[in-house]
Image (cartoon, rainbow, N blue to C red; front, top):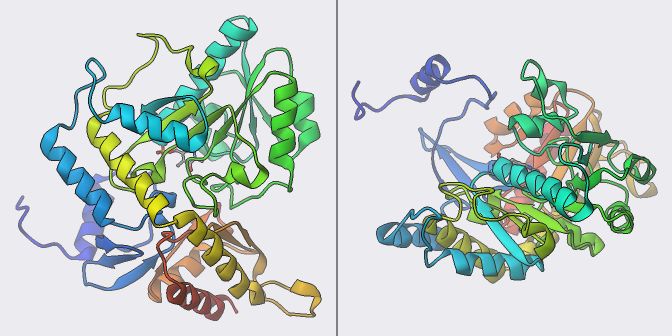
Length: 411
Ligand SMILES: *Cc1c(COP(=O)(O)O)cnc(C)c1O
């Protein structure tokens, strides 16, 4: 084995096929370099990245300020474990608390770990504060949810493909239809400790609940002393045109779960931010993570948050997202009261900020492959939806080019 031998794309695909587990179905492009909105394959062809690693790269690939923070901190100290303090964690916790309007912050690494942490917090809070007997707490989740891949989290999923053969699963989840207030209301019992919800369901196909749903659900939960836990791992940090998608309905949840763009795609960092009475359930020894809150991740995340603020990426997402949605309107049948024909295969175009879904009446994969040929990387989500979520640093000319290419492929 000679690491210096340069492999062709075909060779690398074959090696991965042979030696890697097949838990994804990637497009056949081998990325070897990326900058801003653009990724480059081994032959130097460039593609507009319209997935942004599932919105982890909102700040653009290899953002110089985030990479500089990584390098600078890596030379100082990368990992202390929480057995000792480090000089980055306090500043990071304070920054996230101020940003979210919540009291206490607990850093983890991946999104799934943060969701797990929130589930544990909610259950213990239910036990300690609401006297729900241990082992009986219920968390309400929505059909179509995506909260990650651990055994407990998939237990909350309504998707059979996430669960088949992975049992025994974790009890204590009650699934209600997304966007249905009456169903939520009917599902709340004295054992309900929390409602775990995505403000927009991304993996389900950019599914948006009816206007007012989130605010009404939050107020319903407040009435019953049920925690609202917003999973904004994908919708947060500027993606929908605000810092958090909950802001569109002026909701401050009791718990925010964040990840992905929290570190700008440079290093895994996630957090649970919550009300003091919720986060206080964690006492020394009750929860932890070796890498959680490490100084390298904290320094990277502080830089990543600063970039979103300094470059006004949420505003940019709002403006360019509105533009992109407008430019894609010709795909929609009879929009704006016109007799417009629309594109034959397009069912709907929807989104908020630079988080846009194009729903087709047929599998989206072949369209993604056609777009790839034209230098655009998108990924189908749940078979029929093309997700458009470029880095928020994209410029207007590239948005216009993207729209024109999509119209030409689908029109
Ligand atoms: C990606 C994602 C997760 C899981 O994050 P990982 O870092 O992949 O574990 C959880 N919830 C939502 C909404 C996500 O988009």
